Length: 189
Length: 63
Image 1 (cartoon, rainbow over the protein chains, first blue to last red):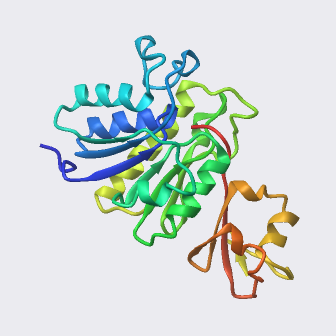
Image 2: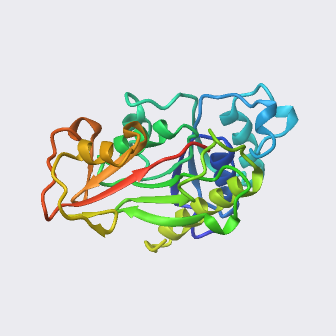
Image 3: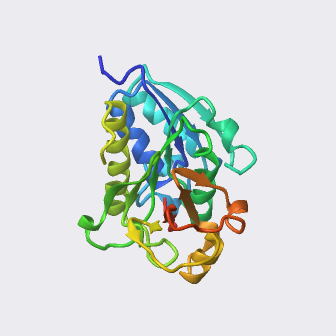
């Protein structure tokens, strides 16, 4: 029995960050997860995202939900197949005080943070800067605002560099670790 | 004023002016102004004062 089984975490985006964060939280025994993604698995995702060739063409939210339930059959999953917009973000995450931001587009990341942080009960753990093959040691967790943690190197952009599994998973690991720390009552990054 | 943990003296203008002057891409940023998240629509109306504390986070793509 995990000390996290009555804890709830929302994950916005199920690409390289979100899929790996979800797996780590499921393995850690977090009891309730919200998965939000509208996209389908593509071949080009398989180098870093938690999907297999048999998942290509399927909704990421569904393919990931199946795997998470194999990891922890007792997991309570809520799945929303929707593109997150300024219009629906507040409603989608209304019941979820702890949110992992794992979107790929920089403006979408900013939009989600700007929208959700107006809710004074929300804490967000975000990912920014994990492209390329730069030093693994450049990726860190920082508490940038009272209720915003940012994981990544804050610099390497997928627009300039390819995305590779190691730094994406390192960043996902930072986010998942910060989530577990927050759930344990520790606010320091 | 304090911006991203550094003391900044002599700046006169709005949050929008500061972001523009420092070449931030406005659609990619989140700004905490004296402990509260500031909405994009407010960037042009908030004029920075000497005791303001600003935290600007600029996101890059990849997820």
